[in-house]
Image 1 (cartoon, rainbow, N blue to C red):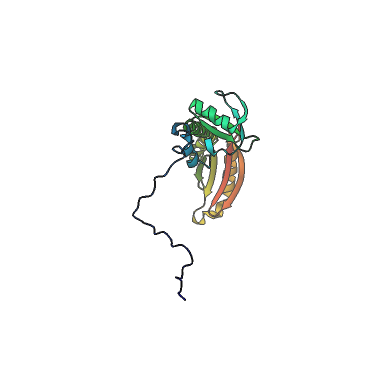
Image 2 (cartoon, rainbow, N blue to C red):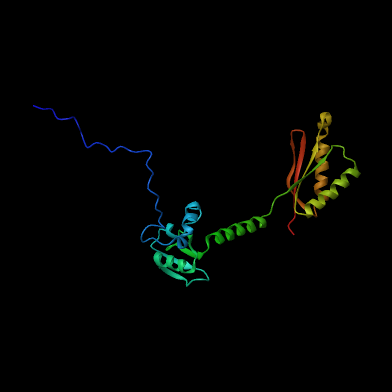
Length: 216
C-alpha cells in the first residue's frame, strides 16, 4: 500500500519580497467616492481628531446646521455634506454632545485660526498677578523707608501685589519685634492704596507681610 505524502493542507504561496506592492487606492480615487477637492478637509480632520470631527468623520445621521452662510435647521448628514461641497467648504462639528450635533460650514483652517485668536484674546483679558518685593533691614532709617514706601505706592497703583519683608542677618534676629512694628507701620501708611493680605509672619530669617491693591 502506497503512502500518501504527509500534507495537512494546500501549500502556502511563496511571498516574493521583491515584487512591487499594488498602489494604495485612496477614498478619493475609489469608484463612487467624492472628488479630492470636495474632501480636502478629511486629512485635516484625521490630524485634528482630538479637536473637532469634520466631513466624513462626523458619525451622526443628522446634524443641526448653524451659521450665516447656510439655512439653519436639522438636516441629514448626507445633505449637510452636500451643502458644504456646494460651497467649497468643510462641515465642522462644533457641539458633538448636542442632540442632534451642531455643525458649521466653514473653511477648517479659517475655523482653527478663529479659535486660536479667540483663545489668545481671552488669555490677554486674564489678570496676571505680579508680586513686587521690598526689602527692609530691622533698623531702616526714615529716608530709606520713605523711598521704599514711594515705590510700594506705585506698585499698588499699577495693580501689583507687594511682598515686603525684614531680613534679619546674624544676631539682628533679636530685633524681630522691631521688624514687626516696621511692617505694620508700612501697611498702615499704604492703607489708602492696598489692603493687608497676610499679617507679618516670620519665615526663617525673614519677616514677611503681603499687601494687595485695592479695587478701583
